[in-house]
Length: 173
Image (cartoon, helix red, strand yellow):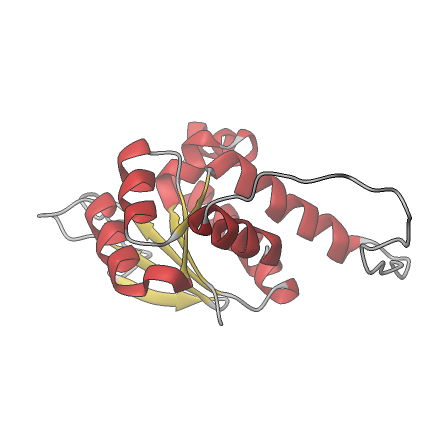
């Protein structure tokens, strides 16, 4: 199943340590830095990525809907917020969607529709890890993640189906 990452753009910029530095000087440079970071992430992980910004104050450099460096960029109309667009996309995509936002209302709605969610700071951390993985000159050693052992862990409480699906999607990041 292909994963569609839906990002609340300004939420990620304002929650980020890196992008908020750009935001202090110019919001357009913060958007460009975010798109560049996501393009680097997309080179490593071939997920469909959509970034939604509030379109009330669209600048001339962007149209309402365009694609740059493989990232789909959408601005909401003046009548609705980016949160409404994200909610609508999460309701349409359902289990295929991963919503990146720290807005509790958006997160709760997306989870109620079956979409997985991740907070903006945690997603930013994953993007920076991917960027450092790409920039390493040495060939990285790939481990399968499993080491044979005889250590027993005992019975555990099984997570709910929704939490198991969410964990599977987050492991794909």
